[in-house]
Length: 200
Image 1 (cartoon, one colour):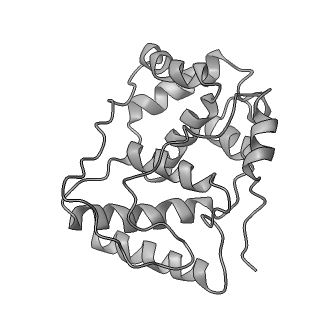
Image 2 (cartoon, one colour):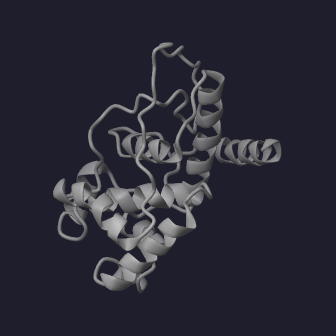
Image 3 (tube, helix red, strand yellow):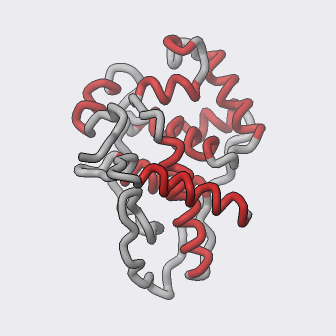
């Protein structure tokens, strides 16, 4: 049996957040950038097309006004929580710009109802609203180090925002094995993270 810390299924997640922050499901696009995507086993990497070009990601919002413009299409799609989850993932990676962090803090302060349960703490709010497990950071970091390395080996750079969107796509997929740990998989993931940090 795999261990997953109470993370809800897609249907449960959608029904819960429609009335709070919008749907938590992502766009429904295919995550073409991923080359390794399992915290349980590491499948052989299928060679990607030499013509593959990763998407050009927008600049991170550096002010509250820019954040409003960034969140607008998410709100129109009834999935604003996706954006906060994306930024949480990037924050776990340690790659979220300080200006963006400030813009998010300003947003949470100005719109207190969004994260009222966590007193305006958007990071804690996302974790609580999505019922993220205590091991989600390990899954985020382990897959980031693996996939970003594989991307470089294949000649392209994995943008952290691109990765965050792909992570959510896989995390919410039916039958997802992301943040599911069997046997000693969790300890192996921690070891991979420590090794990757020593190399960087």
